[in-house]
Image (tube, rainbow, N blue to C red):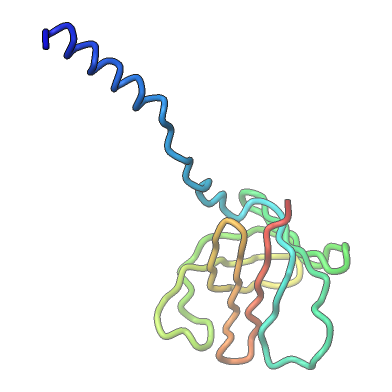
Length: 133
């Protein structure tokens, strides 16, 4: 084989490989911004239907809605939750400072699921939300 043939073969191979695109990875977590529908509440509560609750986040603010009506709004900040009941170690969380109250919750977040744990081991709710389109 001549150098030209080898070089041509390498160019063809490189062009072929560049045409093979790897499947794109799922989109990275887009954070809290957006609206979330309550889909589950764990607590030692009276049995009954799940409340119709939505929480909407902006880059620094939140609004909780119940049956389409705002019930609490304000700002939130990232915090290390250390004082909520049942915590064996500090956890990533949010501090909500709102018109109705100030609370902290440990947070678990994926692209489509948000869990706010207000202290489940001590009968505070653990709320699970699904991202709304």
